[in-house]
Image (cartoon, rainbow, N blue to C red):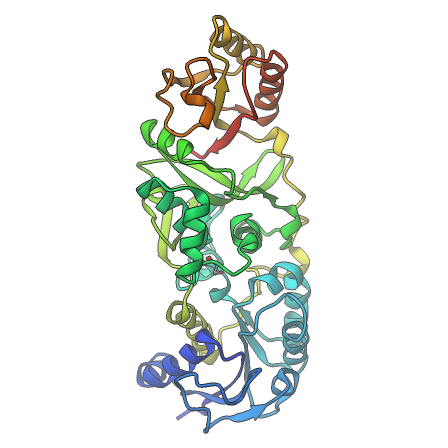
Length: 442
Ligand code: HSE
């Protein structure tokens, strides 16, 4: 029998405990798959005494994760502490410098320091595996880095944040407000106590920047991602989307354009017949548009102890098998600058919801302003007075504004913004227009 692969595990929350359990319960099939046992031999966490439902007696204890990373009697350092800075960063750097491969679930750290860590790993001839950092149990890193290593990509997009998808699903299915659904997500433990990072799209942006690097060879850079969250979405938008054949999802999209790789996170209308539109609740999904054949969509749990542990253990198994790949699928020095998406040049269809002043000539003015910008309409819906679903309290007044919903054919963001500025200046609408970008199937 080949010597066991000795694992040092830093961070013993839900995921850490689930990793220990999975390695124990699956030991026989793990040996069969990689030809050697995998043994957790040493651990580190904030508290030694906390009840985690797993015994720590067999493991060497390190108060300091850096001490664990440098422990000469471990082969692999598994980082499950989280956070983009120390101690996770220093501990991973120490492990790599000591020529130990690293497995991490830490998207924040990879988004901020991924390229530098990749260079350090290459210099020391070791691996950094991070399947658990994006979309939990879904093997999307493996799919992009290995399964599709012979292909070129046109677009990669996905639902990468379970909290946002849960909120949008509940709003749509139960006709609830954003605020009520957010409270529910917090009660169920999906959203963080401070949920801003999830609902304003930053969690999705970090994950997207890593997927874009794997697909397009860009340097991981969350600052290159255009980000809009879901807090402005109203039940009226979801109802209108439904009537017009769409659903609203918070998507992270990385797409090849003539100007370069566009990376963006925003609420998105997707056709109801697309695979991504079927994904409900906290579930995650990623669609990959490959040149030459129809898209691949991977769907599954994006968070939780068991799902995340599954990805972590598979990454450890790869190391036990002796696999070592360039961290982002190609040598770090070959990764190219991402460059921030110039959203004014973004091309696509748009959903626009306006509160139009109810007087003769309003519709004609709106149509004229759109035509001036060469914007062609796919559909236009005007609610009758008092028939507004939930477009605003004054929408029910006979003398007040009425909701008008427009779907455009492909145009540029610049053209849409110019047309809406002109409509506002004409004083034929009340309040700010709602704008949601449309992402079509290929
Ligand atoms: N906050 C994340 C989500 C957890 O809601 O999907 C996984 O990164």
